Length: 247
Image 1: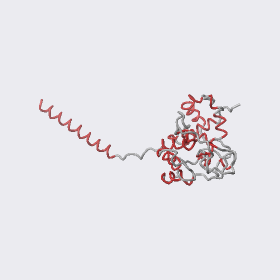
Image 2: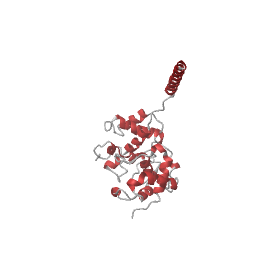
Image 3: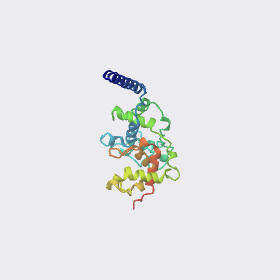
Image 4: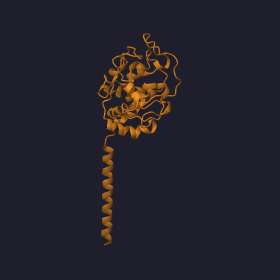
């Protein structure tokens, strides 16, 4: 009896060891996923928005050397932001900045979608853009990832003629009340230093707001929703556009 139990115990132990070895081999044979860059893209979007605030650098006072003389409405630090020339929709002269106070005639970045990040970084550092030495290498990489891999067909999510988001209001309300309302309030009138309401901002410039929903606000604790895809952000934007306007 004792000998049978001993042999049975050895058999069970051997079976467990074999199973563990096979499982370990199988797990090690599973290929690892590609490097996660979504967080880098989101940070790059914040750099595109206001790079000097993200890296806590002094605010530039001078007007960017590439800012065209034809635009006299903007100067100083307002001209030092990537979005100032290329637009919140990344379309430059072909997008929302074809007219208005940020009209420059400068092209968008659609042609850089999918481009090697090394090529984009070289352009960021060239004499025209003038950003060599102003950021560290991770900053350049994040910004390049945003330009190369962070673009999406924004006209699918915002009607260019009406400025209205193409989204699900019910889902947007659920997302907003769960993720955003704690800081922005149920009516989108917080924080107090916002100076206006989210309803006003989202109706005036929906391209700016969808980028901020996707990527977050520079140097703030606002979460980036990019990992959930642009439709979730469009749903939130659609709900924001129903909120009260500033008086």
